[in-house]
Image 1: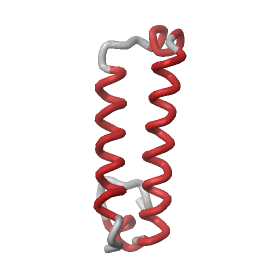
Image 2: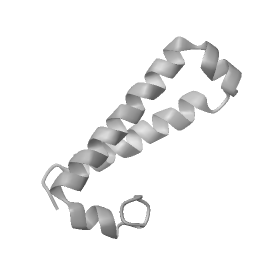
Image 3: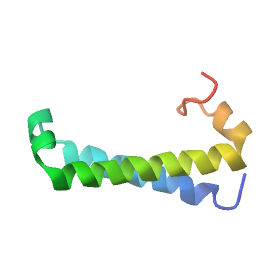
Length: 73
């Protein structure tokens, strides 16, 4: 495992938790009308994507072996 993998995994968990909490009481109409909420969620999706990209590049075997990551499934 790459030395930064735990940090990237933590980024994924934290960003996912933020998205869940920020959108918990929002309907799609609420989400669509709220530029600040959409921007925040978009940023956290970017963080998740970047962390997954780094994990895939540095630890491809770990990513493919993990049942909750979409690689190779």
